[in-house]
View 1 (cartoon, rainbow, N blue to C red):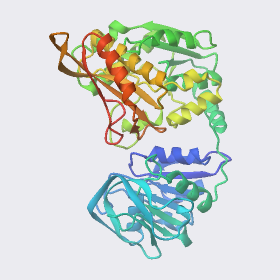
View 2 (view 1 turned 90 degrees about the horizontal axis):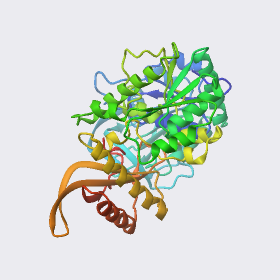
View 3 (view 1 turned 120 degrees about the vertical axis):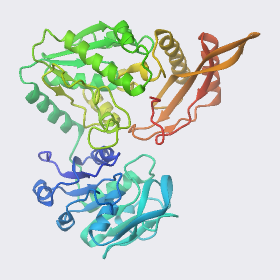
View 4 (view 1 turned 60 degrees about the vertical axis):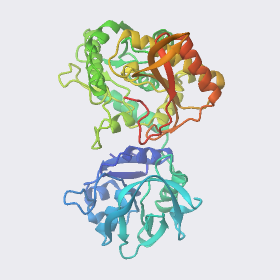
Length: 510
């Protein structure tokens, strides 16, 4: 549980959507972090000897009968504690404060004003813009605490008990949308907890290589290679650990981006790992015939992937299935106590009767930016490491409604046109793509009425893929892309641009 030889921060989970992002933010500041259930006892915490504890947010009210609570003895261990959102409210209630429903709930980016000196806010500009997401608030602080920040509608946006090193913030410092949040967390880690910053990606590689070897033993490993960043980095890490035991299977399910199959074969051929390419486009398309529900699409594709892997790996008796699962997949699938936002084929869609003897997921504890950093450490080319994320189900979840070959071909052409125009204009975005909606729109072609599909374009800026902002793409770029899409692709009658952030939307449409 505790990383040998490294200081550790415990992140106690109370069901908040951003729990892994908190842990990621801590690791990004070169301090090892580990997530444990919020019910972890004070005795267990003491045995782990962390330098600090962070209490996560959660979708509960502390005054509800079934609300999860931390062991109250945690606050008497002498270990620094930072409560975030629900974590702050729960700590306040446990120590004699009062938590009540908000008269005005706060959702989204809110202005926070620092009202008293506090070590957490050293170097943080006031007022600061921070992400709020709460319907309750601390109406009365516990004895010994003082209020250090407020908002227009929240009289206790941050509290502190400096002598006992107990702190709370009602907002979320771990997300990109909180300006100064990283500095606040760094202040807690280094100025309150006494961190020295001894955890690095090199240490992660060393630890995971050993774990893979111990898990796999003498067995073979089969990895589903999509060509995306996650599966590529997973392949490189597993190849380093067990180079003579890895077979990568690339399944062309017919829902790849334009020319992607050829690019994958060129990028991964000739390595020490074994590469097997399978053309299964017709097989997947037939399974998806008539299916319109996005969750059902994901589960069908996930199960079919595993079936293909099992068939192709039948020559390897008792092998492990390796996956490029990363933290955002796990969070959104609700696999670790959170709400199920959408299932990912490599998390919730695996059939229970799978013939593989186990699963190897060396990236499960990493966010996208960490995965890229790991890939660079492993020597992968920037063309692979810097590649845009692509969902496991491929274009099936960017083709709304029923998936057909005709619609996939339209989407492939629209997508590559948009990507070409974005690249040509050097617009800065972390992910951009086209979506073929299920809507048709009336238009005019020449002197005749037309009735074509509506294509939606999306471009976002993010580093953690848990939150994002849409990119203000110049009108000239959107104009060129839209004109090319309508002129060059039969069946498309209209192009629109998505300007919704995350939250409330997700990055993908399905």
